Image 1 (cartoon, helix red, strand yellow):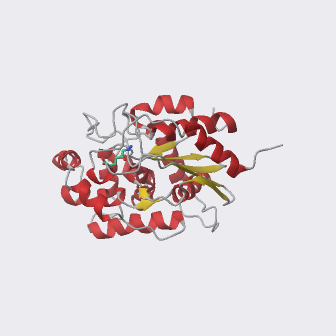
Image 2 (image 1 turned 45 degrees about the vertical axis):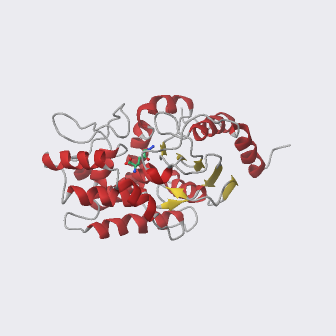
Image 3 (image 1 turned 180 degrees about the horizontal axis):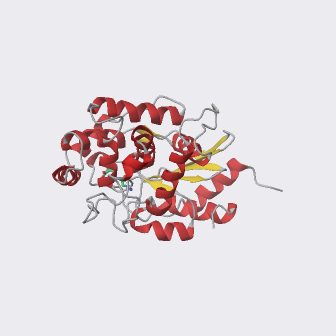
Length: 307
Ligand code: DON
């Protein structure tokens, strides 16, 4: 007899529950107090059915999982060709918080590392947009993808802003190279607000499912992202979404994915599923330890690997 999907998801969570390796992110003080035992999973099919297990209601900041969606909005607003003159599509092989700017063109290597994501955020809408308009743009877009109104965690935002010297340095470097539109400080504040948007595993599964369908929202049936933009975003996620462990991730799991330092990992299996997993303990790359294990197990059980 086949195992029903919710039982299967519970069984996967139980199989990783005893893994206690890793640390909660502490460079953002507000994330230090996260409960390391939290563990949840959700998956949304291309037809719009969501299955979930574990800590489904637990909210956490989206952090770097915001990057592919904000990038999709920037590509939509400014066009793929123009955005590529500012942000490259090459894997950096470096950590998310390395500068990774190309020596000749001064472009950040990709939009998944911080430097590229800060620039992508600042390019939203158009050159004359205000910081509030850019923050509203991503909040509204993420809410449309999740299918509910998302809000920002002000404490996480302030806590990261108080310690964002490195991201500010990147923004100032990009400004000095003539790559940044507007003010460096506003770029980092807007990007940090974007990272502080609260989600749960069902939200990130639903958001990823729209990538999996090629841009059509699985529940409303509306086209919310152009197919060409989705293809671009998924390609960059596949090569760079897991930073300096992107190669290991793609060989082991084999799907485009993105992690965040609050402990979320999302994955999109084209034509099939969006998956979201949450567990706050992180490995040295900033990826959820139990989250990576859950994806490895699902990939093997469900033949998710694209190769
Ligand atoms: O820029 C930062 O440091 C954070 N707001 C986001 C970093 C992040 O989530 C990296 N991913 N694993």
